[in-house]
Image (cartoon, rainbow, N blue to C red; front, side, top):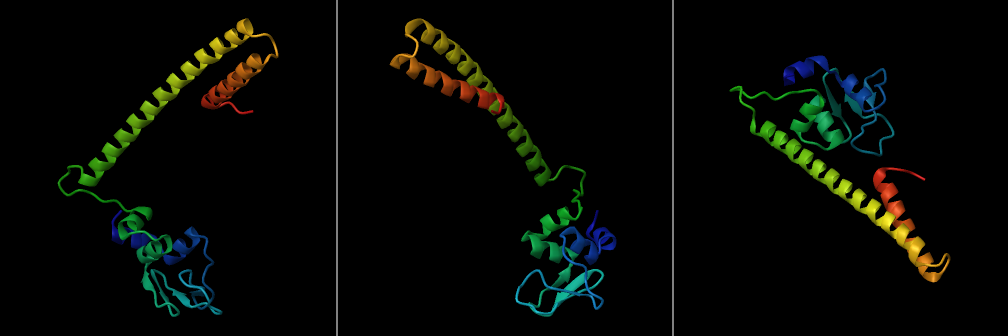
Length: 167
């Protein structure tokens, strides 16, 4: 959607509802969300724009979203459903960058998943070996056995955490 299409389809009342702000009173005023200390409502809400007589902020739906969320016009435009189109049919630099970032995020996630799988396999092997060694080498409830048992428990809990199990 273009800027004009958004302005035609979205009113200030829609923006107020979107952010959970109260609807204007009969005179069209609300308490300004951009400053505090008002005893009376000071922001006049029109159909497509607003004006605050307390803090002197004036603007349209894009300006309101920018001020309310502390974002740039571009982000406000995209937030309200706007789209940027390249003129020559080629992907824009921003689109290429987003595509590259998605690809890198996917590679990073796959790499992390492989690391977790390796760690799970290693922990499984270690816990099995530790349990077998504990049974064969140490007398039950001896100091060495208790120490090995504590280490085995720790590795089991770490493995359960990696597997996503909860206690």
